[in-house]
Length: 153
Image (cartoon, rainbow, N blue to C red; front, side):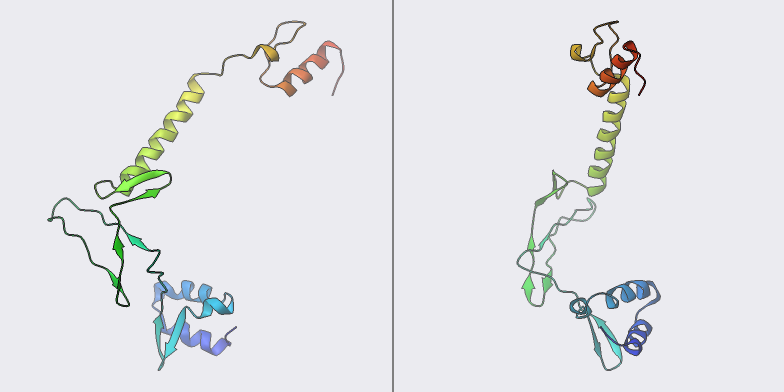
């Protein structure tokens, strides 16, 4: 781990919004400390990007003409992907992540409402043979049948 004065110097170099992040990074294991380099009392954050595995998808604003961005990292150009999977859905250039998030929330809301409005059909195996009462679960039926035998839990 790095010594305390080096951490203080590092924190002094970082903008106010990054101070907590810098402390988190520098308090981590030694291999994570390679994330930040110190040069001539100036701090430079180094971000390692695996260019072989990284794909970029852009979203067209719909206002300006459609122009694919060119992003290069250390001389290697990142490939542009027209679509990718996000939470088991396929997002493409003409689909917004915000729209996908709103659709997921709407579907979840509809599932909850459907469950609340329509109770599950009764299962004949969960019916008390003595009085015909339907129970919600097998353990519920077992507990209810004990009342017929006057056994308290």
